Length: 119
Image (cartoon, rainbow, N blue to C red; front, side, top):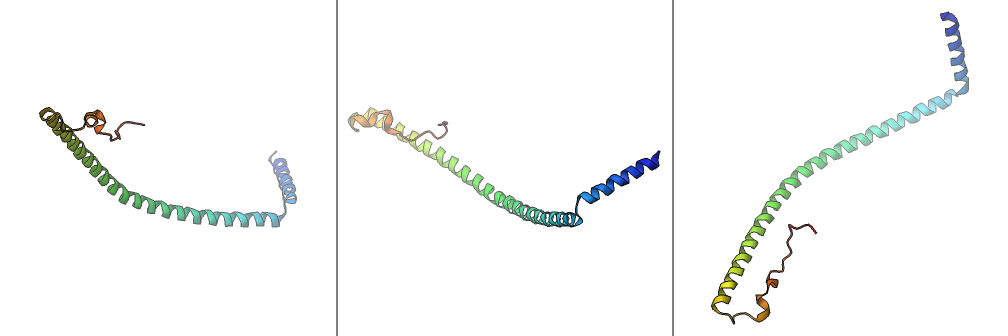
């Protein structure tokens, strides 16, 4: 029983060998080898670039967080300054009503956009 199956398998295998040229198979194997080499080179370059980008990101992220803290501190300082200016202006207006022109007492004094509101 096993012998006829083996003979049939051998015959089918021989038929497949005649369908495909050995030179074509060698050419395909060579091309696959070239493509594999190029892909391995590309993978090495991308790995190197990923390491470089990771190091750059680490450097930049520290600087970015430091600058973010500085900007938040500056914003808080400016908010405090404008609050004090409004307070001083209100006190001056209470003491000297004619100290400022008529239009300067409106709420348009502080025309800074609120950067914390989504636009």
